[in-house]
Amino acid sequence: MCKLTKIERFQLFCLESFKNAADIKASAAFQLFKQTAVFDYLANGYEVLHTQGKNFIIADIKDYILQRK
Image (cartoon, rainbow, N blue to C red):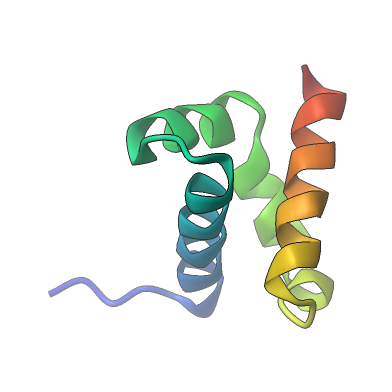
């Protein structure tokens, strides 16, 4: 069994939350996160971002993706 780090668990939480908010398939959300380096952004900003609410995080991810496109 694979044990995830706290950052990996946070990244999965963000991916799932974003997928639900955007009403897209998990595979589409995953590809978007990979293409725009959202996983790196979440890992690098973990210390601050994980203390925020889900709505803030989703909005922040949306803004980040828009800036990367």
